[in-house]
Amino acid sequence: MRMAFFTIPVHDGDEASAALNQFLSSQRVIAVDRHFVQDGHNSAWSLCVSFVPAGDARAAVPARRGVKVDYREVLNEQDFALFARLRAVCKQLADAEGVPAYAIFTNDQLAAMVKGRTQSLTALQTIDGVGEARAAKYGGAFLPHLVSPAADQSGDKGAAGRGLPIGALPSQHFANAYLGALDRFLLEQCHARGMVRYMDDVVWWADDKATILRMMRAVEAFVGDELGLTIKDNVRIGQSRDGVNLCGYRVLPGGLLLSRRRKRRYMLARRYWETAFARGRIDGRALQTGYSAALAITAHTDSSTWRAAQIRRHPVAGPVVTI
Image (cartoon, rainbow, N blue to C red):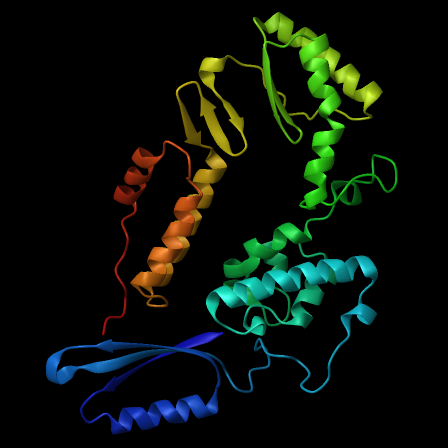
């Protein structure tokens, strides 16, 4: 998808109107945004046209006009279920942006993601017709659905057929039910002073490091013998005053801070929307909407001082093109 910009003067605008109409009739138009710029005798209409170039072989339009592909026949049952999820995501994004679904990704491109098990932005942008810009803009919404189970990528260290794909909603409920026995073991057998668990991330407290180490050995034996599980390698033992990383936050006794990963996500989101504004691709209202999404990453945290420092270090650039 591309954009073109036109200015139609209120007075003597016939030539500019003719040029606009000729352009609209020669391209596959997706959307037209119009704004009236009031400036006395120089008042004008400013238009942004989103379009797909006519005849572009890489254009995001249906590849075979008049030929409808039944993807139930092309894909196996498991792949079609994933294809259907991606198509639902595509429709949600299209409805939010007010564009046809094929302007996000075509069915052929979605099927290519599924068949190729696309798992990175680099791989996504190599799919015919996608490119770097669209991969960067929409990849974050699709890639989480395409991540394969770890067993499929690591030689299947467990029994065949064990496990659920990352991101499957039932996995949260099964993890809570399956690891409930570990909660009871920590509280009733190990007598932990306190504990909290989210999915498979567990934190517990004891009076000293020696006790923690004894509990750790007991937990490792319990989950191995009773649940058939192994402890992750990134075990950390520390004092409460130093805080702990949990659920994407840095949890301290007196506050809730952003983790490094959330800081990076916030900075990337802010940079994306501000760059689009600086290059004239979006207006101030769209920038405000995008910035609200970026701010949502920092919700519930004590991050105002850090965000203010970010604004000072990297101020918002003004639009490159003004009317």
